[in-house]
Amino acid sequence: MNLANFASMDTVMLMSIVNMKLRDDFNGDLDKLVAYFDIDRTALEAKLATAGFEFLPEAGQFR
Image 1 (cartoon, rainbow, N blue to C red):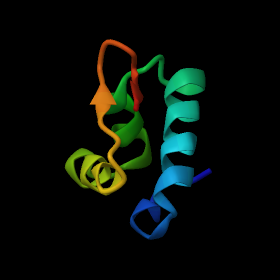
Image 2: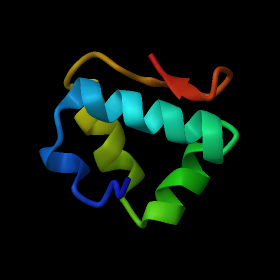
Image 3: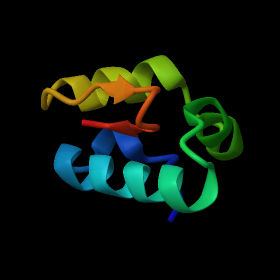
Image 4: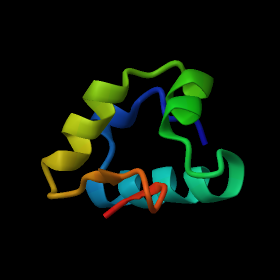
């Protein structure tokens, strides 16, 4: 799944996909995920925040 179009994705679906990728491919490292997909971390976090999700570094996922 390419996250390049994350801005137009459903927020809950986006959170689910991002958390799956963080768990399965990036060991909870958000910086590695955004670098791999060449997306803006601030914009991704802002999009997910619109639905109340925030990144928890200690958990390595959005909740």
